[in-house]
Image (cartoon, helix red, strand yellow):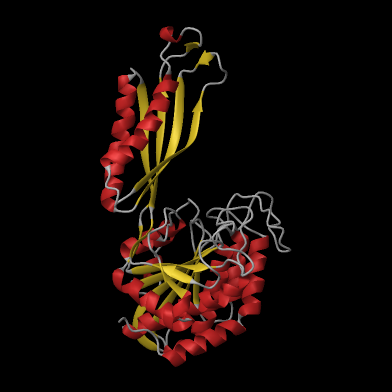
Length: 407
């Protein structure tokens, strides 16, 4: 069994976290009303800085993005651990009907990052109250640009992992879900927790002509269609079903009118994998397939495989520690082992590549909704229940306390 903080400490954390609920809700809703996208989040950054003011933290901001890094020095010497909360929203028009719905047209906190920010602020407040118990330092990572911009990588490049003066020995993150899990339930697993996400860009180049005389042209559209189908066959014939690969073509473009054969046609696909081996082979195989199809049709092809986020992989020891901590803090009934990884992707994966980490999920589905059918993250109707904020804050704080106690 992996040791966690003692029961009295965990009980005190949970009780203190509940007392923070009003201010955490106010912060979360303020951020929700003014969502921002990408790497530059000046309004959100200002709210985080205001929330951390007076806590005695060593605070710095990013150079290439509006991040906030805060370091808490414990009362006793020891290593450093990292707690992470991402801050950015999505280009989604909110239709939730909430009284604190987004006031920015076409932008919404549809993935719950506003709760992540408030929960991490809560964890900071809880740990500041217990500064003398901390045998080391805690780095608080308030990160912009998770939604496709790779903000975690930028923060790492700017020195995040050494912010306490020594490289962090462990890192933890929690992601809320508006569906999948009942409210207040934590779930996680060792090993792969989320997929790597890459993009395949393909343009078939032929020779345009009249739709009535395809023999006089070099039509790229049939070849493009054949390549899309061939990729699906490739997945079932070239990859082990127990190390899965997901290929989804989400964008196709070719031509302007029904009776004109275009010069070129293009598609883009997302490629999801769960191991480094499958990821490397996916790059090789997808490029081989589309180039082979193009050659068979006498076409030229521009094919590019763009690597985006790596696999989010939980360290075995840290995942076991996080699961035990969740059970001890919240109760056995509020932890559910995660049966398989999610095919979504996370740029916390960049942290996981360098530091033993655990990334878990916290259900934020309201009690009057069925978590199995509730609108899920990224939906314009997604709704996250504020009442889980104390649980998230207390769990992050407990992970930091427990890991530092291990030395």
